[in-house]
Length: 220
Image 1: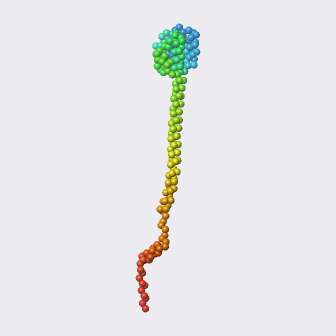
Image 2: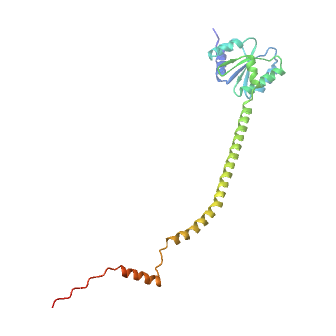
Image 3: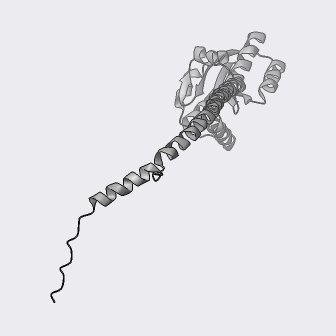
């Protein structure tokens, strides 16, 4: 029957497993205390690095629902409980393995999937979160500059159209002004005839009037 100390250690490991963004497992056979301390310090901003006992870690992993981690518990095991960026942590572990040959990355756990040693090492080749954010910011800045340039081009074309209209409107106004007197002249009534024309008109009117019969003389 497990004693209280082991139960507490398993519970603590289970909480660390459940609270981690990812896990990176490494074999530390032959790693000195000094080297382990230096590695733990280099990872402190992104992960907690601990040497674990396989039997306790296996039990804690099963309690956390990731019993598949048992496949990676071969030989002495150290675990990086990643709290920050998993890519940055993987880079640091891989770099540490180059400095300390006794440190060998065995695999990991990320997004519900067990990672092989090759997959865990491949994480170190990816861009870190900071680099990705920088690239995204650069892309957004480029798109904003492109949008601003397009807006300026459209604005320039619009102003050009306004200038063209401005140059065209005065000519049309002058033409309309010239047409107005001509229309007014055509609309004026004809003047009354004068002189000989008036006499001829009076004669014609007299000839057109019907003759009236002489009134009968009264009888005496």
